[in-house]
Length: 225
Length: 225
DNA sequence: GTTTATATAATAGCTTTACTATCATAATTA
DNA sequence: TAATTATGATAGTAAAGCTATTATATAAAC
Image 1 (tube, rainbow over the protein chains, first blue to last red):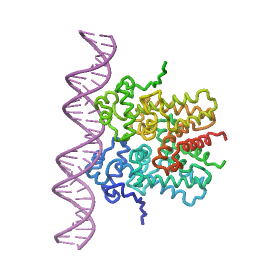
Image 2: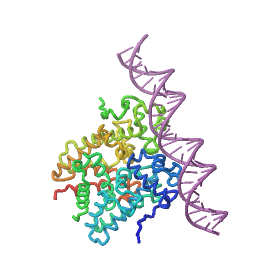
Image 3: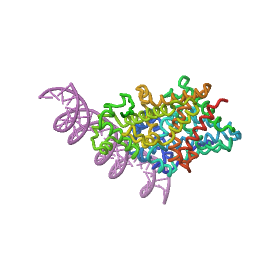
């Protein structure tokens, strides 16, 4: 028996469910590769179609446009992270240990997860770092938010905020701290590699330093005073 | 006598210096308005040209493309923030007071500064919040960084990091904390207005709450233990 | 085993974006 | 007066961002 890992995605994110067909899976998998390779701005459905040997119109049957596809990919990523967080913190009661696990999950490069063969998670993590903010930094945020496109991200944030409150029920900014952890886990890594003087890790380029920074930041803030 | 405030901009950011001509100033001023109105993705030089009553080719004489223009605007903004930081913290010795002043300058909406009439700073702040990350979240970061396009941002970060070190010379992450302050001052405000459940200020929508959060975060982290 | 539905391929076409080039003209400056 | 410089007017091109149609292959339903 093989247990298959699958995430139920928001139906409004696609025109035709890419999980249900071969071409659909190819579109998602290879769009991640191509976005990683050329960046989201240069990425087009036409290039993707050539890359996977189909036609532009073929891709448009699955996704409205490239921005929707990026939201789809990002939503999938955050759902997957939440799954891993729940899995890895299961049976752990100590909120401090939990939070440290989560920070590591967020900031450390992942090894390829064989359970979801059609996605290379290491590359996925890299495009999340560089592109994910673009999903919500648009004029359509509010509309997209109403369609629950950012639910996986928000759920993860709420999950982390809850653990923060278990650690210290009197801490006043659990949600803002949670979103700070998530965002900074990405930005500090991006800065470390691309604008190193914005961090203290430019020399080593070691993601564990980002973990240490975030741990120090978080536990200083929520320590009971 | 009238003292005029002017920022020396990186020459590589433009083809023709927009500060030197009427059309140039109009391009910068109105691009800020138009980006604010329709968002950077929908913004085009053609629309801008119509908006200010010139031609597309006219705009292209000043800036290579809209991304360069965004970098120009962003660089101007960070230079202006640094100027205000230096001005407002002048004669203050206490690093705690300094840092608190800076956090307020970063997170609180600015009133329109009459010294630089051709820019509406309140709108400018809003487009920085929503669009500034897009200046460096590209495949050209490294190249653009070599051309010193992000120098004003990096200088501001270094300035803040230095004050952090005066406060606590043993703190290990002054630069990362500085970039965290700058980024979160923007993101928490963006979240507060657009994805409120990612913050603890969704109800009040008061920027002073972001200031309180950041102050608490920063001084917990750098307090001598 | 034929009908029907579904997925994809192939092609065409249309509007907008993102530019580049050329020529004319108005206003300064040398 | 000549020479620069700034702008305007116009044209044109390649690519991006779509939509539509028709054909075909395959699998599911009857």
